[in-house]
Image (cartoon, rainbow, N blue to C red; front, side):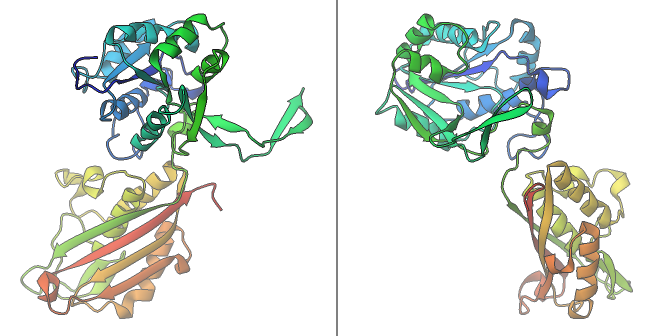
Length: 398
């Protein structure tokens, strides 16, 4: 490694596969992640996100990437933002099979003398720092550590399209990466291993290494099929939105837009669009639930096309993004904060309007109002605000 203070752990990212099942005409590790993939990922490739997770981890001293010989240009484009990082080693070229690629990476890493190695599939871009921590910690009492998730589905064995038996799932686990090992032990095991082994744990097992099982992560999915690029959201999520607009100084209006409908009020709301704080707050809550930026990112005020635009357009766009993420909205809770206008007489109509726009039952939409007891800008009647929570779930969840 580089110096005495550099952590003695290295990561080996295997990125030599062709990934044809994911479609799109290029290896899946070089495909961009979906826009809702989460903070830090906008425009990032699958490989770029995987690399960033290990480079950012304080216990990783260096990262070795193994690529296909035909992918050098794709690789260099994918690492543009981090190519000069001192943790990123010169890439190595892999072989026809994953096992060959891992060995090539291990041989290249010898020059850096790591003590421990984490081997990770580039196609798992959502690896967390906590999972890396668990794998490294487990190496204190074993030759290797494998993250895995217990099999919960019923398993069947079949031949020629016919079920032949039900297989017991007792004691069965779905292995993930990164898989952590003593570096020299894994290198020796790979050098001696016969071909055809599907992961590094299998290589280590054959060499007689003692392997620990650590808790995997449901979000640490392997991007394999086209559907994986549509969503990686596996659990319910909640997003929060907040918006505020000020009133003009003079009473020049008859109505203002609130909750997608006109509400009588004599002071115009100042804003680039129609300034509907209720729909703006809900829209940002929906974007937040899928980690997809905010209204300004999707509809920048600098774009003249958004001048005086109906906020209904923003809400529908956010709802479409939620659907594209493989999710559906199940609940909206919004609070309007103002001294005037009074919201009570229009609460039911707002609820129906919002429910209709999002294809929800009115029981799934809560519209409330409060004041700040004369405090702050809303208390002085200078403007109004709204805050919202949006709850979404994966579309397949009942």
